Every structure is written in structure tokens, then in C-alpha cells.
Length: 445
Image: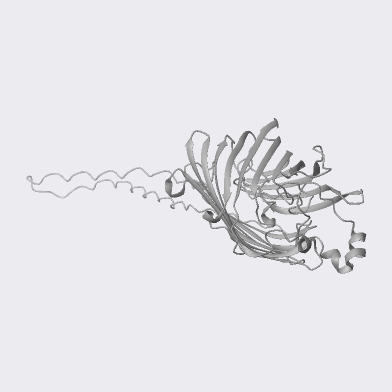
């Protein structure tokens, strides 16, 4: 991965009134001249009023920074999508009552495209205490396109066919088609949170995704034809509770952020696929904890555990998307980094992700500046099918790990670059390392 350019612009949004000029000193009173003779009845003239003391020269101080703009050109490579480039921009509006606390509004956008026909364009908005209320609202809307979206089947035991076997059975063209399909669609995810008192929040989210799926002729997806081939609208409604004691966002150094939620995708949520109505229900538990090991955030152990279960049938392209308040796929840049997007799809999922966030250097002041971290990480877990898989042992886990870096600008903008390697299994019994390279934004948790 190459990050060829980094450009950031910050600006103050609160103007300071120019200092008021001090009134000029009153000229010294001239010595009185001998007055001419005056009639005795004339009253004496009132003494002139003393001029006010000159105010000390006003000193202009730095205005509090109430808004910030940052922009970043993107140049990246992923084993799933190939080399690509784009643009990312961020606008943050500070809370004037707590400049070092949570923002008043955070708006970000990305335009990104790669040589393998991948497009990912989106806009995100986060507004804590919207309209001065106790509600926090965020929304993400985007459009995506994949010429080579990956699909490896359903279940925990899904070893890949070796490339030589694919070419001998299906031809050379199938090497770039067998595990892939075309996807084109739009997506929206919105969350609404309300504080219940103390560290507890109630949240509700609504997820909507319209997708048009086209399998390649020589592909596994075309062979299996699961629910989801074609086009349709998928929607999902979730309701849950959060327990949040983090000391700061988006880079906490201590505390925890846990959530439990239930979800439903059914005709009453407006979910319809190719005219057929399918109902799916699920439960999700995510526990994120942060332990300050050295200094004040010098070394932080960030730990995440995910347990997710689903009953019913989702379109295949949603079977790798977990519940909860975040967009998390089983594979890709959020979990199991090093494996392809959606590498493992099942009815139940368990993933453990520890990260060691180590501060290397800080450029600038304590409150404003650039902080660079090194982050070794690991992702381990598995999926299950309710009907079971013949020959799949309970100890059959999938392991990925790697090294990442974080570039944190002014506490609000987190640039993340991760290189991960997944332990990939093949049908002939061989094992190889699959590499994933990810340039994105914000910590995975």
C-alpha cells in the first residue's frame, strides 16, 4: 500500500472581535491664563471632566477552534479490489461548551475507485445531541459496485479449490470468475441513540440495501444459486442497548463499549427480494474494552469479542454482514483482516480481535497535532450452521493477523492502514497465507 500524498487543512471558525482601541489620553490641561475681568455675578466655570485612563493595549489571543476541515487523497491496494485511488474529506464542528469533548457534528465523505471495477462512494453524518436533545443520530449513505465481489460458499468448512484445479476443470477464464460475481447497488444505515441515564443508551437502527447481483457463468455462485441472485431490496430493523464508559472518542484509552441488540428482516420492515418474502431474525453481542497499559495512552490493549446469531434465510450477500450498530463483515477491513470480504458465512459467528495500539510519536501540542501509532492485531474465530457440517470439528478456527498503523490528526480524524494475513485452506490439504491490504478511516472498533 502506498500513501503518496497527505494534505490537511484546518481553519478557525470563530472570529474574535477586533480589540477596541483605547481612547487617547486627554491632553494635559493648559495652565490657566489670567482671565479678563468678569462681572461678579457670573458663576465660575466648571472644571473640565478628567479624561478616562487609557485602557491597556488589548492582546489578541488564539480563537478557540470551533470547526476543522481535513482532506486526503487516497492511493491504495487491496488483494480483493486491486490498486485504486480517490479522495476523502472530513468536516468537524466542535462543541463550544466542551472543546476537548465529543464533537457537535462530524461529516465525512469518500470517493474511491479501483482498476478491478470496484467503486465505493459514501457520505457519513454524526450529530450528538441533535437539535439540543438527548438523542444522537448518525447516517451513512453510499453507492457501491463490484466487478469481482467474492463468494466462497456457505459454512465454516469451505476450503478453496487450488487455482490449477480451477483452470483444468473450468478453463483459464474461470480463474478470475469462479469465486466472484458482479454487484451494483445502494446502501443506507442510520442509527438513533438516546441516553437512558448514566452510561446506558437505547439505540435503534435501520439498514437498507438495494443490490443487483449477476453471477459469472463459470462461478460457484452460478452453480449454487442461493437466495439473492437477481435484484431486490433488503431492509433490517434493529433495537438494542449500549453501555459506554469510554473516556473519549474516537480513540479511547480506557473504559468499555458494549452492546446487545435484536434485529428483524421481514415484509413488515419492507424487505422483498425478487418478489419473494423472507423473514430473518437475529441477535448480536459486541464487547469492546480498552486497557491503558503504559503511560497516559502510550500503549493501549484494545479488545473486541463478537457473538452473532441468525435464524431464517437472508440473501447470500447479506449472510456475512453482522448485526449491531456498526457495519461489520466476516472478512475484509473490519474483522478477519487478511481474508477476503465475506470469506465465511454462517448462521452463528464468534470472533475475537485484540489490538495493541502503541503510540510512536506525536507531532504538535497535546491537544492539537498528529499522532502516529503502530498496531499489531489478530482476528480469530469461526462460523456455525444450525444444521451442522459433516466433518467440521469445533476446534476448526480461522486465524488472521498483521500489523497496522494509525495516523490520528487532531484527535478527530483517524487514518488506518492495515496489512493482514489469513490462514487460507485448500481442498488438496495445503495451507497458504492470503494477504489483505486496507487503507481506510477510523479504528475497526
